[in-house]
Length: 513
Image (cartoon, rainbow, N blue to C red):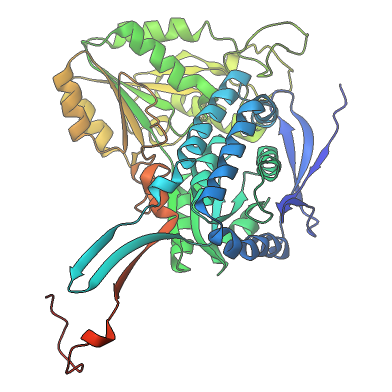
């Protein structure tokens, strides 16, 4: 077996690495080989307070830094990120397992938010009303909150943090990022890039860890807001705890995204989309399509097309141009993030079989191009799934696509709307009237029309409905700007002493003149 260097992975505070005092650590593995490549520090309460204190110390000076200077730093960060994104993609692939091209795509979508934040000056403009009353002017401003915490998941170690921290920093806040302990190195790489871009020390900090670190952020009086992405049970916990502590919270939870295919749809387009959206990044996307709702009579034909495409996919090591045998190739899908998660997803496949769903393609039989100890599970396709089955009700977060057959548009709509989640959905049709009706009637936050993964561009908001979101504010876009700032309204009057009115005492409520 090839030896692997095990790297210690710590925190980042005050513009420099911070090892911390905790003796707790967790293994970081390369999912394609199963080998431990790092030990990430799991923060103690004292470690967490040290990192939070660094952000608190930097908050006042950064808040007072001019918009012009903040924007210059943001532009510098954008240019550095663009020129060195290959480095970041390699880190993501090594710790998450997604293929190199997918890692680059993740970075590109995150970079869109950085570019959006480069225009923050326009978005922070207030309003002004001269002469609102006699001699009275009114103006409004938006000001930063202070220290904000970001708790991000394993599936997008670069993109999800970038949904939040560019807007937060450009708005004048300081940040403590708590990345997933499964793939923590991308956060440190981003911290180093911020320093190179000229961001003052303490404005961007990284706190590694588990529940101890999360609870420290939720409870700290120095932290004014929390942005979270993860499973619904944890999102609900974060929302309850942070709200109880008086913080502003946006907690994005789980998903069970449906793709409705009407009988008039282009079935080749729909089959391509189902495979791309169901199995990309090994299904470890909060916007992955996990349920395909086939409106009869197209199910047999559609399932056959999806199965044919699924069997052509290459599963293997996500590192570009190499595998365990040194052969040149490009994989379509990599491993799952950990062995435990791989086993959990395989358990759902068994559950689906036992419940009576038809297993069309069994990902447990995959022959991956990679190390035999990698966390492999191939694309899996179920047909004749019903809403009471566990593979339908649970968020699997793996490459498992379930086909549910229905008899009409109304039945498809009712199925989507009855689900506890409301993150993303898609409809495939050539009927503009049906698409427009679906847009209006479906109870979901993000909708695609002949687009399987409708992740909005950065200047629109990202977020779901129902149990996919706790809090009332979505990520990035103008909603993100409002989340990371507070409004302030100033009413002013400047009196000419020579024109001061007589009888200055007046106990009645002021009247507009």
